Length: 285
Length: 289
Image (cartoon, rainbow over all chains, first blue to last red; front, side, top):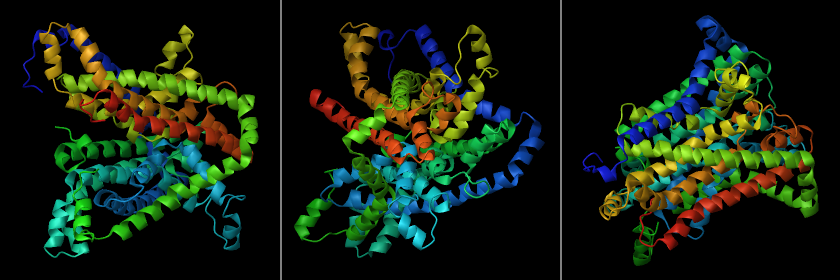
C-alpha cells in the first residue's frame, strides 16, 4: 500500500492520523495489555520463590497434569477427525453439505455453560445414559472423561475451520494428478495432501490448544471441582482466587498466560513465515 | 464451493476419482454426532419436554428475567463498543504505518488466546477498589468491579478480536480507486469516508458485531469474577444456569439454556445472512466477508 501516492485529499490530516493511532494504541494498552501486565505483576508480587512454591504445590501440579492430559487427547482427535471432515467437505459434492458446514460452526456459538449442561443431561444421574453408566460402573461426569468431552465440544470447529478454506483454495488438481499417475489413496494423502495442509493443520492445532488449555465454563459445569482429581488449571485458579489466595491464583494464571503468549508468538511466526500455506484470511504480508 | 473440479469428473467418468469419500464423511459425521449433536439433542429434547408453559414459567421467574436483561444489555453494549474500537484498531493497523504496528496487530489476538479465567481475575484485580484503575475511579464515585460496568468491560475484552478480525481483511482488500475517484470528483475526505468506505465496511462491521454479541451472551469465565454475582443485580444468565444445576433444578437450567441457544442460533443465522443480504443489494460489489 506504500506505493500508492498519497494526495492530501486521499489521506486524513496528519494530526488526525496521529490522534487515531494514539487512540488505537491506548485502547489496546488499557483493554488488552493491562490485564496481561496485571497477571505478571500479581504473580511475582511476592517474589520468584513464592511463585515457584505456588506452582509446585500438589494441587497445582495435578491441575497442570490434568490440563495437559486433556490437551493431549483433544489435539490429536481434532487433528485427525478434522482432516477427514475437511477432506469430505472440500473434495466431494453431496446433499446437505451447506447444513453440515453450519453444524460444524455450531460450537462457536454455543455458550460453554450450555455445552456443559448438555453433557450433564446425557451423563448425569438423571441423564439419558444414567442407567447404562451405573450398570457398567463408568463415571463420566465429575471425572476425566467428562472434562475431555466438554473440551472436545468447545474446540470442535478449530481445526476443521482452518482446513476447509485452505483445501478449497488449493483445489484438487494435485491430488487428481497423483491419482492419475497411479498413486494409492494413502500415498496421495501422504505425499500430496499432507504436505499441502501441514502448516494450516498446525495453525488450527495451535488455536485449538490455546482454547483447550484455557476452557473454563464447560469444564467447570462437568468437573465437580474435586481437588487433585478433576481440577484443571483454570478451575484451580478459580478455587485459589475464591479462597483469597491471590498470589497462588495469579501464579497459576501466569503459567497459562505464558502459554497463551507462546501460542501468539507461534501464530505470528506461522502467519509471517508460512502465510502462503495458510487460508487466505490469515496471510499477513 | 461450486468451483471444484471434482463433481464434473464424477459425472463424466461415472466414478469418483478421489478416494475416501465414504470413510472421511462417515468418520466426520460420527465425530460430529458424538461430540456435538448428541449433547445438543439431549438439551433440545429436554427443553421440548418442558412444554411452552413450563418454559414460560421458568423464564418469567423474576431472578431469571433480571439475569437475562443484564446479559442481553451488557452483551449488546459491549459488542457495540467492541465494534467501534475494533474498527478503529483495524483502520489504524491497515492504513497507517508507524513503529509497533505489527506488535499492535499481533496483540489483537491476545483475548482469543488468554484463558477466560485468567482474564477474569486480572480484570477484577485492575478494576476493584484498590486496583490499578479502580483506585482512581472509586474516589470519583465510579464503581467498576462488581457492577454491570465491570461486566461490560470484560465482554468488550472478549469481543474486541472478533470485531477487528472481521473488518481487517475487508479493509485490506478495499482498493483505493473508489476513494481516489470520489476525491477527484471533489468530495472531501470526510464525505469519501462516509459515502465510499463506510458502506463497504458495513457488512463486516455487522458480522463482527454479531460475533462479538454471540460470544458475549454465552461468556462465563471472564465475567463471573468481575461480576460480583449478586442475584437480581449482577448475575448473568450463564451463571444462573450453573446455579440452577447446583440446585438440581434441571428444568430451570434447561429453560435458560434453551433461550441462550436460540439466541445463538439467531446470531449464527444473521452472520450467515449478512453477506447474502448485501450481495443482493450491491450487485458486483467486492465481497470478502
